[in-house]
Image (tube, rainbow, N blue to C red; front, side):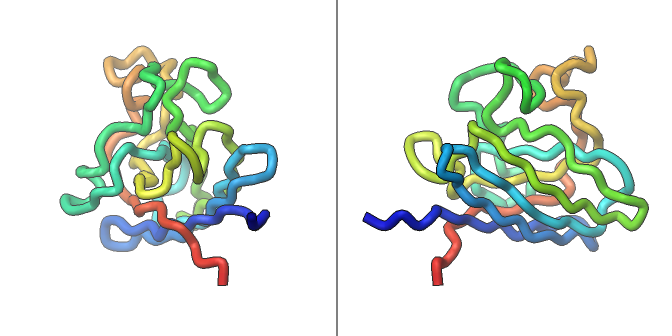
Length: 158
């Protein structure tokens, strides 16, 4: 049995100039670390989520809803009431670049609720973390259009 960590990657594309590369690694404590850089964003906060489907046949719009195997309402990554795929916001600087590292216990790369083959999506607007009072707050965080996405796939260990 190999003790090598499970790793995954997603290449983000969208619009005319949104590009990014994300690396996922399942840590020994069960959490998954997501590290990446996404360029071409407008400055400020952007909702960042794992969506249920790895289907980009209609761009980011065919990735389905947020990954939600436990049938909960949308929330913050710190909340007990949240979709597994709710990763909050990433922040782009004035140069349109977002560099980030997120650790989360609800997005495993192995097992029944693995995120492999699903999509990661960047939204146009900030995620209100389910607390905005908008009709979409409890389903999408009212994070707006899907402006970039990529399919999460296993990364070569070579």
